[in-house]
Structures are given as C-alpha cells and as structure tokens.
Image 1 (cartoon, helix red, strand yellow):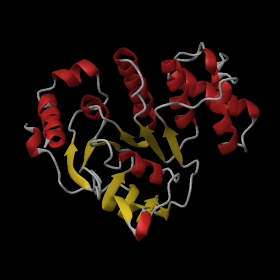
Image 2 (image 1 turned 30 degrees about the vertical axis):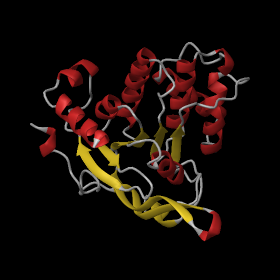
Image 3 (image 1 turned 180 degrees about the horizontal axis):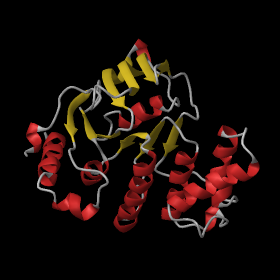
Length: 273
C-alpha cells in the first residue's frame, strides 16, 4: 500500500475512540522584539495525541519543534492557546511528564541508581525505601544496566548515561514521555541499540510518547504517527503520516516491509519541498 494513501492531513489523534491524553488548542508561541514587535515561532497549532500513541515530530531547524516540546514540559510559557494534559491545563513542570533530553544531565558524582532514585523518591515518597529501590533497579535493568547500578555517572559511556536517562523517565510512571532528540549525540551503532532498548521498554509500558527527531528512519521505526512541521516563523503542522507497521517491531522486518520506503519517501519529499 502506498504511503501517499496513508497520510492524514488532519492532526488529530490516531483513534477517535481512544482517550486523548494531550491536546494543543490554538497554541501560539511568540518572543518579544524591539519596537513592540514579536517573533512568532508557532501560531494556532492544533494537535491531539491519544492514550498509548508514539508520535514523532520532524521539521527543519527553527520550525519550533523543541519549543513545542518545552511548552508541553512546562519549561517555556505559552503565548496563546492552551495545552491540556488529561484534560487539565499545563501550568508548569510536573512528574506527570517524563522528559528525555539529548543530554541526560546526570549528577556525575551519583551512581546510576541514585540518579534514577532522585525522581522515584519524589514521586513515590509514600512507598518504602525498598520499594523505591526496586522500582529504580527494575527500570535500569530494563535498559540493560543491571550490572552498572552502582557505577558513578561520570564513569559511564555516553550511551550508558542516556540509558540511565531513559530509565529515569520511565521510572516515575508519567502520563506522557517527552523525548527531545534523545539519540542525536550518539554514534549510529549506539543510536540503533538505544532505539531498540527504548522500544522494548515502551512496548511493555505503552506510555504516550512525543519525540522530536531529525532522523526520518528513526521516526518511522518508533512511531505510530509522524507530525511534519512547516518551516518557521509562524510554523504549524503541515502534514501527518500514519505508520501502519505491526508492533512489536523488529528492525530487520521494518526495513524489509514493502511500505517502509514509501513512508521514507513521503517524509523526505515533505522536508525537501
């Protein structure tokens, strides 16, 4: 089936029968400039994301992808419109959003376990110390770090540090995962390994996820939908591509799927156009 027959220009949730977790309503972000002018990064953006969806957002640099993610995270104030998470307006950062940045920003003098426990101790303060330890250790084991729980963050490779960042985000059981180019600083082999690790944990947890990426293949491999942003200023959603690939996914099967290169061609054509 041709990917051109699968894309959907309406930026709504993939399944209208599924509960909407995140909704952006007429979302606008503008920065003040001299002489009373403003630079409008995003304008009247509309987006709905359903429970359990994995959505990637792609577009050229400067189109407002990371700005959008930072507003959802509550780290960047909204200029106009609303962002609703589970029906409630976002008013600042909160543990209902797990963020995985390009750089995991670990505390270097702490162990992998201690870095994950920082969030777990806050969110699950009502649980016993043993339970909190087990939660952190479980998610570190899920990303392949069961033998590195007590290694200092400064002694971990860049890829291992990012695994800690992934475990930290899942461990607080957020309503939504926000991933800002989480593998952008890694070499291609490590990047593929971490994509597989992320997907393995996500397949178990099915936490709604929104990821910013410049990698078209990564977007196809991980996502249920790929949101394509128009170039800024005043960026909006230009197109939406539904990815109809069965889950769980294996890399080899995805690359050999007859629709893979149709999907890829559609995304590249949008970016080049």
